[in-house]
Image: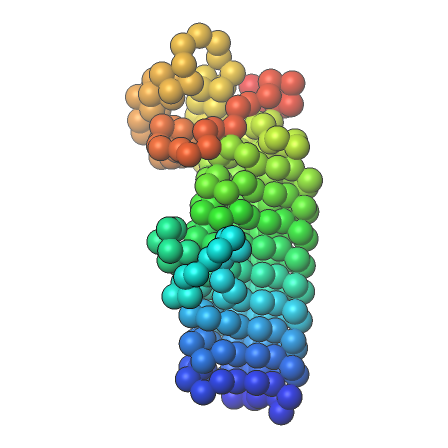
Length: 270
């Protein structure tokens, strides 16, 4: 371990092998830092926070603050951050709350650019990318491989499905489907994240099926979206990605599903 003489590490903090703690950092007594974690300078790890191996905290990162809730009196909330994450300048992540399960989780290999925020009781999966200033309200769920553009804002209790992408300056008051492309002040779906699907190595047949299922569920008139989703689930029973999309639509949602905007859908998504 290497701890700068100006850093403050409270008794009780657990530090793994190879941890580096730079100038003016604070690590409180209930913190756990995994093997090879690096705090570059002026970073703060508060509360019941666990940081996974090899994660790097840049200057002014604050982890494990209490949930930003009026009259919050819950001090036992936890924050768990996975391995191999990069948290750039000014990133903040809050602990869980009494009414939200008590824990906030962030997966492995996330890249969080400057001034991003993960609110209390959020659950963020692996391999996400949050561009500068992207923020999550409390209780959000973010799937594997999601990309949030700069200054994107996600309202509390919203779900963002795996492989989805939000453009910069977009706001999500409703759930974003897996593999969707979300855009706008009150984000609508402008098609599928085709580039992301190709980068995942999905077979052409699966992408083709997803395109047709998206069209049938979101762009075809007649009946309810849920009836069309059930029909798509039966029609493409052999395509796991379609099953994932329609299961997301049919699952319980506190905020509802963001609709598609036909004017934004590219021809290759139709």
